[in-house]
Structure formats: C-alpha cells, structure tokens
Length: 217
Image (cartoon, rainbow, N blue to C red):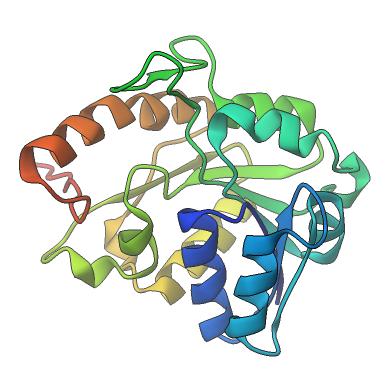
C-alpha cells in the first residue's frame, strides 16, 4: 500500500520507517519538497521511500498519517487539496501541545473540541481516525518494548476506517485485544487531554517507554 506520512520529526520517522519495513511505499511529507530531514530519511530508508511536500504526499498516499506537530497541524494541512484526502483513511497521531509558556505544555484545544475533530471538520470527506497519540514513538511501532498487555486507543466516525487502522496496528505488533475503540471522533478530546498525565508519568518514571493497561472486572 502507498502511505503518506506528514511530518519529519521523531514520530513521523518512526512510523514511516516501520511502514517501509513492512513492505509499504511511503512518501514523507514536509512543507516543501527537499526538506533536509525528509531527504536524509528517504536516502537511507530504501527504494520504497521518497519525500515531497505535504500536498504531494497527500496525493500520493492511499492512507495518510498526520505526524506533524499538533499545534501546527491545521496550518500544515492548509496546503493539502481536500480532494486528495477524500475517501482516504487519515490517521491523526498528533497532539495539540502548546509549549509557549514552557514546561509542562498546555493544549491549544481541549474540553469541548479536539485536533482530531478539527481535522475532520476541515476535511469532511476524509475518514479520520485518532490513534497512537497516547504513547511514545518507539512504542507505537514496537509495542513489545513495554512488557505485558497494554492498551492503544482509537476513535473515529467511520467504522470501516477504524477496522483498517486496527489491521495496521496489528501489523505493527499490537494484539487485537489491546486495541480499544473509544467511539466517535469526539473521543479524541480524551486521548489528547491524557497527555497531561502521560507527561507526569514520564517525569516520575524517567522513561517514555511506558503505557497504561485498561483492566475490566
């Protein structure tokens, strides 16, 4: 399958690298073709890897992953033609973190809205699924880093799209029983706001290689 991975940072590179390793074709998107990080990644990732602008990547991908910095995601996506996302599964991994006042960050949107919902409104024909935004990039693509059973959350309005994302997560190594569907895209509010707790857990444990497990009686 052809994937667009929007974003050149740690998360984008982790996701893009995993997808290439699984045999997919991947275009890493950035604001402009020729981005230094994207060019370097494509040069080392193999024949199935390429780079381009956000718009070029969105057009290329059969499935699109948003791994841009959450506070800038809407601005980044403004360069994408909506028709190039129409009907495509759009996996939103980003968190709208605001570092303008230092650490710990706050959120640019919360409580009554979320980045996932904003993206769905801006691109109503895209099939937006919020996923993987509650864990470290390494754990996203290699869940066995954290021992035992632990939970990854998904949400979105399109059931078929979520089923496709579940299949993708399973190919990353997530057992189906550890993938929890929280419902419609409004559930992105909860997983984005969870970042405040995740950051505290990271500070207390000293590692980002952590996750939570949902146990039901």
